[in-house]
Image 1: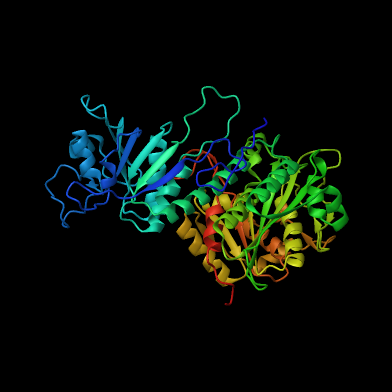
Image 2 (image 1 turned 90 degrees about the horizontal axis):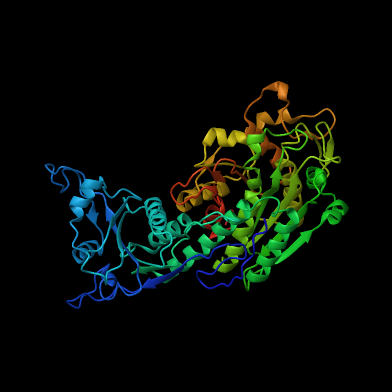
Length: 546
């Protein structure tokens, strides 16, 4: 399935190079004067709201708890109107309290109440939507935005008074939720095509900088999702390298791609071993952003992404069902590529380099085998215990290269690495490991702020001996007969051997990289996890120890 690349521009709302559908145009509308000459939040809805608008949206929040102003004798709590909601109800002649009670809507995050206009008011937009914003926390606002996006799929123009009076960061959360919740997986030959996200979103009282940041972040997440969702027959290592070149040209990145022959000449044995069974040779992509006018000592963060374009397990073959999601085993590489492009658009004050270790783990006459010994980039020899533990092999090369050649201040890898991480944490949190407390603390804070949550697990040094080998410097998995467990920790300990003492963090996204159905601002399939986390981490972060 060949999915076309679309032209891109840096204008807000433009498609990224890989998107099969464009982000909506998002417009910040000034709060307009009310009839008495004052300016009230939400008043931008009323003067000409029906002109070309097919959906109006306003916000509602839960009623205060009994004892804090709510009448305890009421049958059920009635959601509290936010800016513009009362005025909209009057215009539509709707008794919102009755409608809400009948629908059991209370204003919780993401709840939707739809009201149609009276028959004698054809000038009004065809729908008035009340969306629950809960406590107006960033998480609640993202959920609200996503619900509104799903409730307005196929609309041309949506005008909303949902962010009036909120701080810019809160506004950004709502807009981001709308944009991410409206994403749809690229499809080929599906008729009729599913309704796309609304073409235009107008927000009264919105901060233009918040709109811009949300658009750039959402575009990066959409890019990561698309790259990860596209089938492996298209998304080969060479194809992904071409997309990196295209993205680099459009975002002012420096991009270098190493081909199979270059990898062999330079000693990238891990990548070559994993890719040896495929007719699509491996690639190593290096994409770098340097802030304009940056000094020589500008912080340099290197992001390494696992990019297994399809993982059959190799000779250690996966069961059929376990293969069905394995086109997404390059989610880490997609995330770090999207992040470096967004860092350039956001003009972040930090040098960022993304290193993508790209290979297909297939079965062929030349496939690497269990009990092979592979020499990695830094000379470490690795005993192969299971060809389905291929991610750590390609990351070993990429981490060793980055540590030795790129002079990073911080080294962070992102990978769908272990089933153990997914079993332990599910799909809401990534497993976080590392050896620098400051970097780990900042990543935890970035996860909490961005919605890409992480949970720190320990690097238990006593476990390292389980990787001792009789025939190589190290084994890459624990012996099966040992029944050792702690798979995510053991994998992280293996990776640490290749970081050369650089402050390092490992983010195992095996759980949250993909989901089976829409949830919050996440959509079925690839989630783009890690993009928001790393952008939040990079934004204004001080150098470790500074």
